[in-house]
Length: 255
Ligand SMILES: C[S@@+](CC[C@H](N)C(=O)[O-])C[C@H]1O[C@@H](n2cnc3c(N)ncnc32)[C@H](O)[C@@H]1O
Image (cartoon, rainbow, N blue to C red; front, side, top):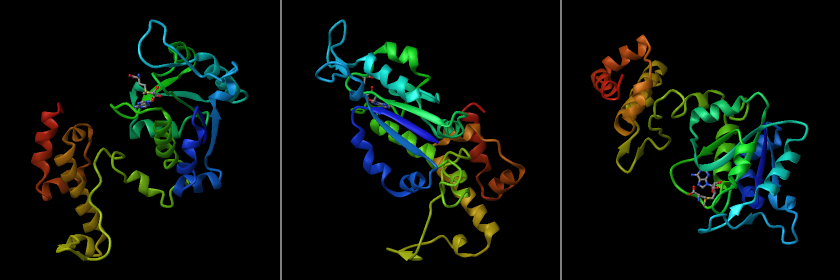
C-alpha cells in the first residue's frame, strides 16, 4: 500500500513512521509513505498556502491552488483515492480501515488541513471522501492522517507477526476485547483467572468469549445489536448466564 500525504508539516510524521510496526512495514516494502510539503507548490514569493476567508471572520483558509498543483503531481501516473481529513467527515472506524486496506488502486492520498480548513472548491473538485477521527477539533489533519496510516497498515497481509491477531481485535467481531493477563500470576492481591491457567484451549476460548460479551454489555451495549450469534455462541451464552441480558440489550437497541 502506498500512502501520499499532503501537509505543510511533513516533519510531524517522522517519529511515528520510524518506530515499531510501521517502521518494519516500511522496511519490508509492505507500505511506502511519501510526504509532500504543500508549500513547495506555492507560487508567490512568501510561499503562501493560506489566505483570509471571503466574507470575513476568524482565521485563515488553505488556498486551493497549491493544494491542487501538489495533488496533480502526486496523482501523475497512478491515481489514488483522495481523502481529506476533516471534522465534518464520516467517522473513521475499524470498518473504514478494513475497506481502505483492500482498496483496488493500492494508493491512498491523505490531505491534511490546517487553520480553518481547506477552500471548499478543492474538496468539491478533488476529494473522494472526507474522514473525521472523532467529534473534537485538532489543530491540523496530520495526527488524523497518521491514525489512518496506522490503522490501515496493521490490516495489510504480513504486517502483524500473527495473522490472527487483527481478526481477534476489538471491533473486528463487533465485541470488545476481553481483559488480558501476563506474568506474574498474582499481582497486588489479584490473581489471573483460573480458566486461563487451565491449559484447556476449549475452556480458555469459552472464557474469553464470555468475557468479551460481558465487557461489551457493560461498556458498549449498543454494539451487541448488530451481532448474529452462531448456535454454539448461543449455547455458550446460556451456559455462562448471559443469554437473557444479551437478548434484553438487543431488544432495547432495536433488534
Ligand atoms: C482547526 S481544524 C479546522 C476546524 C474547522 N474550523 C471546523 O470548525 O470544522 C484544522 C484542520 O485539522 C483537521 N482536523 C481537525 N479535527 C479533525 C478531526 N476530528 N478529524 C480529522 N481531521 C481533523 C482538518 O484537516 C482541519 O481542516
